[in-house]
Length: 454
Image (cartoon, rainbow, N blue to C red; front, side, top):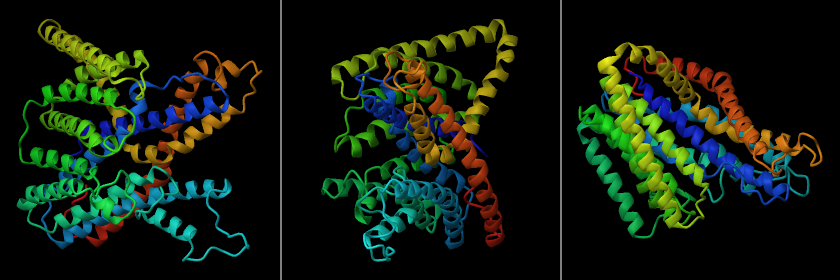
Protein backbone atom coordinates (compact mmCIF):
# COMPACT_ATOMS: atom_id res chain seq x y z
CA UNK A 1 0.00 0.00 0.00
CA UNK A 2 1.45 3.34 -1.10
CA UNK A 3 0.84 6.11 1.42
CA UNK A 4 0.04 9.19 -0.66
CA UNK A 5 0.40 11.56 2.28
CA UNK A 6 3.97 10.43 2.97
CA UNK A 7 4.86 10.70 -0.70
CA UNK A 8 3.54 14.27 -0.69
CA UNK A 9 5.59 15.00 2.43
CA UNK A 10 8.71 13.83 0.61
CA UNK A 11 7.99 16.40 -2.07
CA UNK A 12 7.59 19.12 0.56
CA UNK A 13 10.88 18.10 2.19
CA UNK A 14 12.66 18.38 -1.17
CA UNK A 15 11.21 21.84 -1.81
CA UNK A 16 12.27 22.99 1.66
CA UNK A 17 15.86 22.07 0.76
CA UNK A 18 15.48 23.83 -2.59
CA UNK A 19 14.35 27.01 -0.82
CA UNK A 20 17.28 26.77 1.60
CA UNK A 21 19.86 26.58 -1.19
CA UNK A 22 18.00 29.22 -3.21
CA UNK A 23 18.38 31.50 -0.17
CA UNK A 24 22.16 30.95 -0.18
CA UNK A 25 22.47 31.50 -3.94
CA UNK A 26 20.26 34.59 -3.78
CA UNK A 27 22.56 36.15 -1.18
CA UNK A 28 25.60 35.18 -3.26
CA UNK A 29 24.10 36.87 -6.32
CA UNK A 30 23.30 39.99 -4.33
CA UNK A 31 26.84 40.10 -2.92
CA UNK A 32 28.27 39.74 -6.44
CA UNK A 33 26.32 42.85 -7.39
CA UNK A 34 27.83 44.68 -4.36
CA UNK A 35 24.36 45.36 -2.98
CA UNK A 36 23.26 45.52 0.65
CA UNK A 37 19.79 44.16 -0.14
CA UNK A 38 18.65 41.54 2.44
CA UNK A 39 17.01 39.22 -0.11
CA UNK A 40 13.52 37.82 -0.36
CA UNK A 41 14.01 34.17 0.70
CA UNK A 42 14.28 34.58 4.45
CA UNK A 43 12.42 33.46 7.55
CA UNK A 44 11.75 29.75 7.83
CA UNK A 45 13.59 28.99 4.59
CA UNK A 46 16.87 30.19 6.08
CA UNK A 47 16.62 27.04 8.23
CA UNK A 48 15.61 24.86 5.30
CA UNK A 49 18.42 22.41 5.97
CA UNK A 50 15.77 20.80 8.16
CA UNK A 51 14.36 19.25 4.99
CA UNK A 52 17.17 16.69 5.28
CA UNK A 53 16.06 15.83 8.82
CA UNK A 54 12.55 15.26 7.51
CA UNK A 55 13.95 12.99 4.80
CA UNK A 56 15.83 10.94 7.39
CA UNK A 57 12.74 10.37 9.52
CA UNK A 58 10.73 9.42 6.43
CA UNK A 59 13.48 6.99 5.44
CA UNK A 60 13.34 5.22 8.80
CA UNK A 61 9.57 4.95 8.58
CA UNK A 62 9.63 3.61 5.01
CA UNK A 63 12.21 0.94 5.88
CA UNK A 64 9.94 -0.53 8.52
CA UNK A 65 6.78 -0.05 6.46
CA UNK A 66 8.00 -1.83 3.32
CA UNK A 67 9.39 -4.78 5.28
CA UNK A 68 6.34 -5.22 7.51
CA UNK A 69 5.30 -8.51 5.84
CA UNK A 70 8.77 -9.83 5.09
CA UNK A 71 10.26 -12.83 6.82
CA UNK A 72 13.52 -12.22 8.62
CA UNK A 73 16.62 -13.95 7.32
CA UNK A 74 19.56 -13.61 4.92
CA UNK A 75 17.45 -13.65 1.72
CA UNK A 76 15.21 -10.81 2.90
CA UNK A 77 18.22 -8.83 4.11
CA UNK A 78 20.02 -9.29 0.80
CA UNK A 79 16.96 -8.31 -1.25
CA UNK A 80 16.36 -5.24 0.88
CA UNK A 81 19.96 -4.10 0.50
CA UNK A 82 19.94 -4.75 -3.23
CA UNK A 83 16.73 -2.75 -3.64
CA UNK A 84 17.91 0.26 -1.66
CA UNK A 85 21.43 0.45 -3.08
CA UNK A 86 20.21 0.20 -6.68
CA UNK A 87 17.77 3.00 -5.96
CA UNK A 88 20.40 5.32 -4.48
CA UNK A 89 23.56 4.79 -6.52
CA UNK A 90 22.52 5.09 -10.22
CA UNK A 91 20.97 8.54 -9.82
CA UNK A 92 23.73 9.62 -7.45
CA UNK A 93 26.40 8.61 -9.96
CA UNK A 94 24.74 10.73 -12.63
CA UNK A 95 24.50 13.76 -10.34
CA UNK A 96 28.01 13.23 -8.95
CA UNK A 97 29.40 13.01 -12.49
CA UNK A 98 27.90 16.42 -13.23
CA UNK A 99 29.36 17.72 -9.98
CA UNK A 100 32.78 16.31 -10.84
CA UNK A 101 32.64 17.77 -14.36
CA UNK A 102 31.89 21.19 -12.90
CA UNK A 103 34.73 20.91 -10.38
CA UNK A 104 37.21 19.86 -13.08
CA UNK A 105 36.17 22.66 -15.44
CA UNK A 106 36.34 25.20 -12.63
CA UNK A 107 39.69 23.92 -11.36
CA UNK A 108 38.31 22.51 -8.13
CA UNK A 109 39.65 18.98 -8.68
CA UNK A 110 42.68 18.31 -10.87
CA UNK A 111 42.71 14.96 -12.66
CA UNK A 112 46.24 15.64 -13.94
CA UNK A 113 49.02 16.83 -11.65
CA UNK A 114 51.34 19.79 -12.34
CA UNK A 115 53.78 17.63 -14.32
CA UNK A 116 51.04 16.55 -16.71
CA UNK A 117 51.01 12.96 -15.42
CA UNK A 118 47.64 11.23 -14.83
CA UNK A 119 46.43 10.97 -11.26
CA UNK A 120 47.22 7.53 -9.77
CA UNK A 121 45.02 5.49 -7.37
CA UNK A 122 47.15 6.49 -4.38
CA UNK A 123 46.82 10.24 -5.03
CA UNK A 124 44.53 12.39 -2.84
CA UNK A 125 42.44 13.46 -5.83
CA UNK A 126 41.77 9.90 -6.89
CA UNK A 127 40.83 8.85 -3.36
CA UNK A 128 38.55 11.86 -3.01
CA UNK A 129 36.68 11.10 -6.22
CA UNK A 130 36.44 7.37 -5.50
CA UNK A 131 35.07 7.90 -1.99
CA UNK A 132 32.64 10.50 -3.29
CA UNK A 133 31.15 8.16 -5.88
CA UNK A 134 30.98 5.25 -3.43
CA UNK A 135 29.55 7.49 -0.66
CA UNK A 136 32.31 6.62 1.79
CA UNK A 137 32.99 9.09 4.65
CA UNK A 138 35.96 11.40 4.18
CA UNK A 139 37.31 14.67 5.52
CA UNK A 140 35.79 16.77 2.74
CA UNK A 141 32.28 16.90 1.33
CA UNK A 142 31.67 14.74 -1.77
CA UNK A 143 32.04 16.14 -5.29
CA UNK A 144 28.39 17.14 -5.05
CA UNK A 145 27.93 18.78 -1.66
CA UNK A 146 24.53 17.30 -0.80
CA UNK A 147 25.94 13.78 -1.10
CA UNK A 148 26.87 13.99 2.58
CA UNK A 149 23.32 13.03 3.51
CA UNK A 150 23.43 9.97 1.24
CA UNK A 151 26.46 8.73 3.15
CA UNK A 152 24.17 8.57 6.19
CA UNK A 153 21.44 6.87 4.13
CA UNK A 154 23.77 4.12 2.94
CA UNK A 155 24.84 3.54 6.53
CA UNK A 156 21.19 3.30 7.62
CA UNK A 157 20.52 0.68 4.95
CA UNK A 158 23.42 -1.53 5.95
CA UNK A 159 22.51 -1.49 9.63
CA UNK A 160 18.83 -2.10 8.91
CA UNK A 161 19.80 -4.98 6.62
CA UNK A 162 21.61 -6.52 9.59
CA UNK A 163 18.53 -5.99 11.76
CA UNK A 164 16.46 -7.88 9.17
CA UNK A 165 18.53 -10.96 9.98
CA UNK A 166 16.91 -10.98 13.43
CA UNK A 167 13.39 -12.21 14.23
CA UNK A 168 10.80 -9.49 13.66
CA UNK A 169 9.94 -9.41 17.35
CA UNK A 170 13.45 -8.24 18.12
CA UNK A 171 13.08 -5.02 16.10
CA UNK A 172 12.09 -2.79 19.07
CA UNK A 173 15.06 -4.02 21.11
CA UNK A 174 17.44 -3.57 18.18
CA UNK A 175 16.28 0.03 17.68
CA UNK A 176 16.53 0.72 21.42
CA UNK A 177 20.06 -0.69 21.58
CA UNK A 178 21.06 1.33 18.52
CA UNK A 179 19.72 4.53 20.05
CA UNK A 180 21.35 3.94 23.43
CA UNK A 181 24.67 3.38 21.68
CA UNK A 182 24.44 6.72 19.88
CA UNK A 183 23.50 8.59 23.06
CA UNK A 184 26.36 6.96 24.96
CA UNK A 185 28.84 7.88 22.23
CA UNK A 186 27.74 11.52 22.42
CA UNK A 187 28.14 11.55 26.19
CA UNK A 188 31.66 10.23 25.70
CA UNK A 189 32.42 13.08 23.30
CA UNK A 190 32.89 10.86 20.24
CA UNK A 191 30.36 12.60 17.97
CA UNK A 192 31.15 15.36 15.49
CA UNK A 193 28.90 17.60 13.40
CA UNK A 194 30.04 15.97 10.14
CA UNK A 195 30.76 12.31 9.37
CA UNK A 196 34.48 12.61 8.63
CA UNK A 197 35.22 8.90 9.03
CA UNK A 198 33.50 5.65 9.86
CA UNK A 199 33.45 6.28 13.63
CA UNK A 200 31.87 9.75 13.41
CA UNK A 201 29.35 8.33 10.92
CA UNK A 202 28.36 5.48 13.24
CA UNK A 203 27.90 7.69 16.30
CA UNK A 204 26.39 10.74 14.58
CA UNK A 205 23.25 11.92 16.44
CA UNK A 206 21.30 12.35 13.16
CA UNK A 207 20.98 8.57 13.06
CA UNK A 208 18.40 9.05 15.82
CA UNK A 209 16.09 10.60 13.23
CA UNK A 210 16.15 7.38 11.23
CA UNK A 211 15.38 5.52 14.46
CA UNK A 212 12.49 7.91 15.22
CA UNK A 213 11.00 7.11 11.82
CA UNK A 214 11.49 3.38 12.36
CA UNK A 215 9.69 3.62 15.71
CA UNK A 216 6.78 5.39 14.00
CA UNK A 217 6.67 2.60 11.43
CA UNK A 218 6.73 0.00 14.18
CA UNK A 219 3.85 1.71 16.00
CA UNK A 220 1.66 1.90 12.90
CA UNK A 221 2.40 -1.62 11.70
CA UNK A 222 1.53 -2.84 15.20
CA UNK A 223 -1.91 -1.22 14.93
CA UNK A 224 -1.22 1.68 17.30
CA UNK A 225 -3.17 4.43 15.50
CA UNK A 226 -4.54 7.07 17.89
CA UNK A 227 -5.88 10.63 17.39
CA UNK A 228 -4.02 10.99 14.12
CA UNK A 229 -5.95 14.09 13.05
CA UNK A 230 -5.08 16.00 16.20
CA UNK A 231 -1.47 14.75 16.07
CA UNK A 232 -1.15 15.98 12.48
CA UNK A 233 -2.40 19.48 13.34
CA UNK A 234 -0.16 19.85 16.40
CA UNK A 235 2.88 18.39 14.64
CA UNK A 236 2.43 20.79 11.71
CA UNK A 237 2.49 23.79 14.04
CA UNK A 238 5.39 22.32 16.03
CA UNK A 239 7.47 21.89 12.89
CA UNK A 240 6.81 25.50 11.81
CA UNK A 241 7.78 26.65 15.30
CA UNK A 242 10.97 24.57 15.24
CA UNK A 243 12.04 26.07 11.92
CA UNK A 244 11.37 29.58 13.18
CA UNK A 245 13.31 29.07 16.40
CA UNK A 246 16.41 27.67 14.71
CA UNK A 247 19.36 29.93 15.37
CA UNK A 248 22.78 30.12 13.77
CA UNK A 249 24.55 26.78 13.25
CA UNK A 250 26.42 25.62 16.34
CA UNK A 251 27.78 22.31 17.55
CA UNK A 252 24.48 21.71 19.35
CA UNK A 253 22.29 22.82 16.43
CA UNK A 254 24.09 20.57 13.95
CA UNK A 255 23.86 17.53 16.19
CA UNK A 256 21.30 17.00 18.95
CA UNK A 257 19.58 20.34 18.37
CA UNK A 258 18.27 19.38 14.97
CA UNK A 259 17.49 15.84 16.13
CA UNK A 260 15.29 16.95 19.03
CA UNK A 261 13.84 20.17 17.62
CA UNK A 262 13.27 19.01 14.02
CA UNK A 263 13.39 15.22 14.19
CA UNK A 264 10.74 14.75 16.89
CA UNK A 265 8.08 17.02 15.28
CA UNK A 266 8.83 15.36 11.95
CA UNK A 267 8.26 11.93 13.48
CA UNK A 268 4.96 13.09 14.98
CA UNK A 269 3.88 14.54 11.63
CA UNK A 270 4.68 11.30 9.80
CA UNK A 271 2.78 9.31 12.42
CA UNK A 272 -0.26 11.55 11.98
CA UNK A 273 -0.19 11.61 8.18
CA UNK A 274 0.38 7.89 7.73
CA UNK A 275 -2.31 7.15 10.31
CA UNK A 276 -4.79 9.34 8.44
CA UNK A 277 -3.92 7.54 5.23
CA UNK A 278 -4.49 4.15 6.84
CA UNK A 279 -7.83 5.28 8.28
CA UNK A 280 -9.00 6.97 5.08
CA UNK A 281 -9.34 10.34 6.84
CA UNK A 282 -7.23 12.52 4.57
CA UNK A 283 -9.77 15.37 4.87
CA UNK A 284 -7.76 16.37 7.95
CA UNK A 285 -5.01 17.44 5.55
CA UNK A 286 -7.08 20.49 4.61
CA UNK A 287 -6.91 22.25 8.02
CA UNK A 288 -3.32 21.04 8.47
CA UNK A 289 -2.26 22.50 5.11
CA UNK A 290 -4.11 25.81 5.49
CA UNK A 291 -3.05 26.28 9.10
CA UNK A 292 0.58 25.40 8.39
CA UNK A 293 0.66 27.67 5.35
CA UNK A 294 -0.84 30.54 7.35
CA UNK A 295 1.66 30.10 10.19
CA UNK A 296 4.51 30.06 7.67
CA UNK A 297 3.32 33.25 5.96
CA UNK A 298 2.87 35.05 9.28
CA UNK A 299 6.41 34.22 10.33
CA UNK A 300 7.76 35.18 6.90
CA UNK A 301 6.21 38.65 7.28
CA UNK A 302 8.73 39.40 10.02
CA UNK A 303 11.65 38.65 7.68
CA UNK A 304 13.71 37.27 10.56
CA UNK A 305 16.93 35.36 9.98
CA UNK A 306 18.59 32.77 12.26
CA UNK A 307 20.98 35.56 13.32
CA UNK A 308 18.07 37.57 14.79
CA UNK A 309 17.77 37.72 18.61
CA UNK A 310 16.02 34.75 20.15
CA UNK A 311 13.36 36.98 21.75
CA UNK A 312 12.34 38.34 18.33
CA UNK A 313 12.18 34.89 16.76
CA UNK A 314 10.25 33.52 19.74
CA UNK A 315 7.64 36.29 19.64
CA UNK A 316 7.20 35.82 15.89
CA UNK A 317 6.80 32.05 16.34
CA UNK A 318 4.19 32.49 19.06
CA UNK A 319 2.11 34.78 16.87
CA UNK A 320 2.51 32.54 13.82
CA UNK A 321 1.47 29.41 15.72
CA UNK A 322 -1.53 31.14 17.32
CA UNK A 323 -2.78 32.47 13.98
CA UNK A 324 -2.11 29.13 12.26
CA UNK A 325 -3.92 27.26 15.01
CA UNK A 326 -6.86 29.65 14.78
CA UNK A 327 -7.10 29.03 11.02
CA UNK A 328 -7.12 25.28 11.68
CA UNK A 329 -10.01 25.67 14.15
CA UNK A 330 -11.95 27.87 11.72
CA UNK A 331 -11.50 25.37 8.89
CA UNK A 332 -12.64 22.52 11.14
CA UNK A 333 -15.67 24.54 12.30
CA UNK A 334 -16.65 25.58 8.79
CA UNK A 335 -16.17 22.03 7.58
CA UNK A 336 -18.46 20.72 10.32
CA UNK A 337 -21.11 23.34 9.54
CA UNK A 338 -21.01 22.58 5.82
CA UNK A 339 -21.18 18.88 6.58
CA UNK A 340 -24.37 19.49 8.52
CA UNK A 341 -26.05 22.03 6.25
CA UNK A 342 -24.46 21.80 2.81
CA UNK A 343 -22.70 18.42 2.38
CA UNK A 344 -22.95 18.81 -1.39
CA UNK A 345 -20.63 21.83 -1.23
CA UNK A 346 -17.99 19.76 0.53
CA UNK A 347 -18.30 17.02 -2.06
CA UNK A 348 -17.91 19.59 -4.83
CA UNK A 349 -14.62 20.83 -3.32
CA UNK A 350 -13.19 17.34 -2.90
CA UNK A 351 -11.83 16.95 -6.48
CA UNK A 352 -9.78 20.15 -6.15
CA UNK A 353 -8.19 18.97 -2.91
CA UNK A 354 -7.55 15.51 -4.37
CA UNK A 355 -5.88 17.16 -7.36
CA UNK A 356 -3.62 19.19 -5.05
CA UNK A 357 -2.69 16.06 -3.12
CA UNK A 358 -1.98 14.18 -6.35
CA UNK A 359 0.28 16.99 -7.54
CA UNK A 360 2.17 16.97 -4.25
CA UNK A 361 2.44 13.19 -4.46
CA UNK A 362 3.94 13.43 -7.96
CA UNK A 363 6.47 15.91 -6.61
CA UNK A 364 7.28 13.26 -4.01
CA UNK A 365 7.95 10.79 -6.82
CA UNK A 366 10.55 13.21 -8.18
CA UNK A 367 11.88 14.20 -4.74
CA UNK A 368 15.15 12.24 -4.94
CA UNK A 369 15.99 13.68 -8.35
CA UNK A 370 14.92 17.15 -7.20
CA UNK A 371 17.26 16.81 -4.25
CA UNK A 372 20.23 15.75 -6.38
CA UNK A 373 19.82 18.06 -9.38
CA UNK A 374 18.31 21.24 -7.96
CA UNK A 375 21.67 22.90 -7.28
CA UNK A 376 22.51 22.76 -10.97
CA UNK A 377 19.12 24.23 -11.88
CA UNK A 378 19.40 27.04 -9.33
CA UNK A 379 22.95 27.78 -10.39
CA UNK A 380 21.93 28.12 -14.04
CA UNK A 381 19.15 30.55 -13.15
CA UNK A 382 21.48 32.59 -10.97
CA UNK A 383 24.18 32.77 -13.65
CA UNK A 384 21.72 33.70 -16.37
CA UNK A 385 20.42 36.54 -14.22
CA UNK A 386 23.98 37.65 -13.46
CA UNK A 387 24.58 38.26 -17.16
CA UNK A 388 22.12 41.16 -17.10
CA UNK A 389 23.96 44.47 -17.27
CA UNK A 390 23.39 46.93 -14.42
CA UNK A 391 22.20 49.65 -16.83
CA UNK A 392 19.88 47.35 -18.76
CA UNK A 393 16.16 48.10 -18.84
CA UNK A 394 15.63 44.54 -17.57
CA UNK A 395 17.96 44.98 -14.59
CA UNK A 396 15.16 45.68 -12.05
CA UNK A 397 13.67 42.30 -12.99
CA UNK A 398 16.66 40.14 -13.81
CA UNK A 399 19.71 41.43 -11.95
CA UNK A 400 19.97 40.22 -8.37
CA UNK A 401 20.81 43.12 -6.09
CA UNK A 402 18.78 45.66 -8.05
CA UNK A 403 16.55 47.95 -5.95
CA UNK A 404 13.13 46.49 -5.23
CA UNK A 405 11.97 42.92 -4.93
CA UNK A 406 11.08 42.13 -8.56
CA UNK A 407 14.48 40.53 -9.28
CA UNK A 408 14.27 38.41 -6.11
CA UNK A 409 10.77 37.25 -7.01
CA UNK A 410 11.88 36.28 -10.51
CA UNK A 411 14.79 34.31 -9.06
CA UNK A 412 12.54 32.56 -6.54
CA UNK A 413 9.93 31.55 -9.12
CA UNK A 414 12.48 30.73 -11.81
CA UNK A 415 14.59 28.73 -9.38
CA UNK A 416 11.62 26.76 -8.07
CA UNK A 417 10.31 25.94 -11.55
CA UNK A 418 13.77 24.99 -12.80
CA UNK A 419 14.34 22.74 -9.78
CA UNK A 420 11.02 20.99 -10.42
CA UNK A 421 11.89 20.61 -14.10
CA UNK A 422 15.32 19.21 -13.25
CA UNK A 423 13.74 16.76 -10.82
CA UNK A 424 11.18 15.64 -13.38
CA UNK A 425 13.85 15.17 -16.06
CA UNK A 426 16.12 13.28 -13.67
CA UNK A 427 13.23 11.04 -12.67
CA UNK A 428 12.09 10.32 -16.22
CA UNK A 429 15.52 9.95 -17.84
CA UNK A 430 17.57 8.30 -15.09
CA UNK A 431 15.66 7.32 -11.99
CA UNK A 432 12.59 5.67 -13.51
CA UNK A 433 14.51 3.61 -16.11
CA UNK A 434 16.96 2.52 -13.40
CA UNK A 435 14.06 1.45 -11.18
CA UNK A 436 12.61 -0.58 -14.06
CA UNK A 437 15.87 -2.34 -14.91
CA UNK A 438 16.93 -3.08 -11.36
CA UNK A 439 13.37 -3.97 -10.37
CA UNK A 440 13.33 -6.58 -13.13
CA UNK A 441 16.74 -7.85 -12.03
CA UNK A 442 15.62 -8.01 -8.41
CA UNK A 443 12.57 -10.07 -9.33
CA UNK A 444 14.84 -12.45 -11.23
CA UNK A 445 17.27 -12.78 -8.35
CA UNK A 446 14.67 -13.03 -5.60
CA UNK A 447 11.73 -14.47 -7.55
CA UNK A 448 10.71 -16.92 -4.82
CA UNK A 449 10.29 -14.32 -2.17
CA UNK A 450 7.98 -11.35 -1.72
CA UNK A 451 9.85 -8.09 -2.10
CA UNK A 452 10.66 -6.40 1.24
CA UNK A 453 11.51 -3.11 -0.40
CA UNK A 454 8.23 -2.15 -2.06
